[in-house]
Picture 1 (spheres, rainbow, N blue to C red):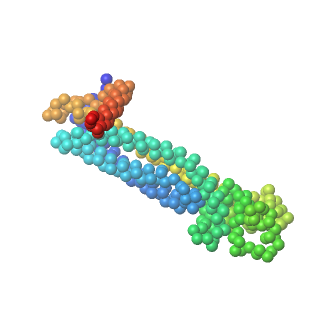
Picture 2: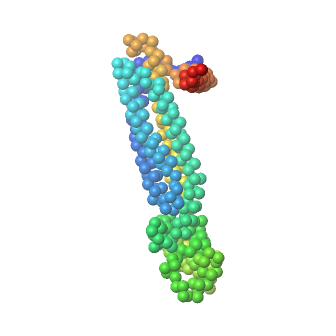
Length: 346
């Protein structure tokens, strides 16, 4: 028994074809939007590649670009089919190709749904990439004279200013790295020597942060050196004056920025997927309604359209049987080829 059977007369078939034609061309526009979102996300990831350890994943933006292009192609083709469906002479050339086209549309819808899931699930991989990338970026902050790293200081400073953040997880991360270049250290100074000798790695570690960590909203001039020394500053308490700097770490700030972007994109892709599913269902009804016209010479006659020719369980069984037959056919062909290549007995 056919699933979700609907009766169509000539007027309903024409309205269905016209409605699907319009929906297909709207979907071409949504395909352009998906393509644009993919390009935008790719650019945003490239802009921060230096603090992502140059290992940022471009699978999601590339997928968005791909589904955007495919949506434009498939829906433009679907619009042409729906337009020609109103003319029996033109529709006859599409008739053999409509069923394979519907199968391709179903596969495309599955892929589109997976892309929307990937948008929501990208946070995990992005978090680990940002953690390692920011850690390395802070380590190379001082290497202003090293080729390939000379722009890292500017990158980190601009990042902290733009996103109002400091360090990887917080401003205390700067206490654990030498962010001042040796070029600007006086090695004849006893203080410098003592600081370098105070740790096994021989690094010049200070309880200070770069200027870009300063919070301009603080009423007090920025305190960025000797942060843990209360006696070094007048009327200063290390535990209560932390608002002088940005408290949030840059990993959290960037993660929030990209997660918000990806969640919005995931929601848009999900809406596009629902629209595409509606079009595919409509195409299936149009296909079956035109196939089941009892008298092609009488366009006014009624016909039946359905989603599936059989029930869901029967359809699933027939698909499995077809796959088994296909597998057995491949095995028989392989065995025949091996038999044909076997050397003749002496």
